[in-house]
Length: 196
Image (cartoon, rainbow, N blue to C red; front, side, top):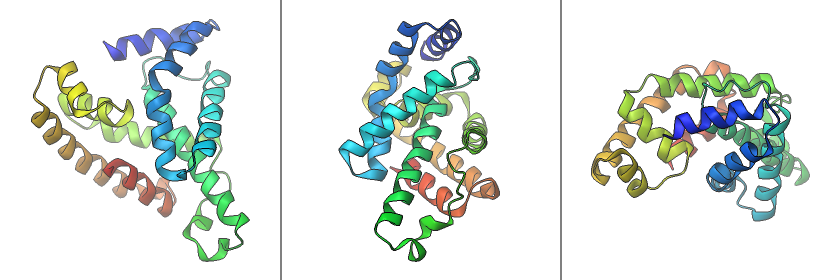
């Protein structure tokens, strides 16, 4: 099972196991790249951010708990890096004061904020029923198609779409209710990603 495999891989990172890191990269890099590209719309920038995300995974490997979703951690970090890229791009075009990204905190890159956002996402997902949680994790955090998720869970594609739709509503509502832990623009951008 995917969660058990991730547990084993993250545990192996504690022993500086490069092959475990490579396996996590192979498993998640396409989905993470896709999420980054939704924000940047720039291939080269997305590749740079992707590299930064997995570099940080290696650097922070001793701090990641094996029983927590590494895909969720990677998503939140890639989200923050994407926001930082957009903020920098806005500054470079000299219209920072007219754009909402100026509201994002200067320390958006800090691990404290990443952890806060990760736990908010994790909290929202953990409130889902077990089957909806599996569907959300496969489709949104691992980037699987409806067909792939249906095959993995042995349910119909229609059921996957229904569960995902209900899960998205629940997760978005939870995040909006707890937006005081995020800046407003970050909440809106996250909800945009969830709805994709």
